[in-house]
Length: 137
Image (cartoon, rainbow, N blue to C red):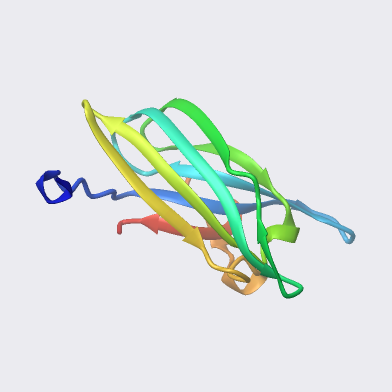
């Protein structure tokens, strides 16, 4: 039963939507996994999808699956590029990984219109502006 499973708390792991570059015509965005732990993550797997309403109709993006392998301690890795057209949707990232044989997982959700210039801050280990979810909680 679910109540019998241990609660494996995810800490010091973030997902960030990062502004890579911008020109007067376009901005380029990528999604990163940020591991601020002092130990590596093993067999890292991330699924991503978007969903919500646009122009009064329900929209769902394709679910993408990314096997990232092992992620070094205190490092970051690019998961995928993300198009500004989906910033009006809920963007969900489900992370699973192992530490010393124990599995951890966490869902990170970027709400519609949360990826905006007003919410940008410097993303640790990536050292670029972005919107970050996770970290110490």
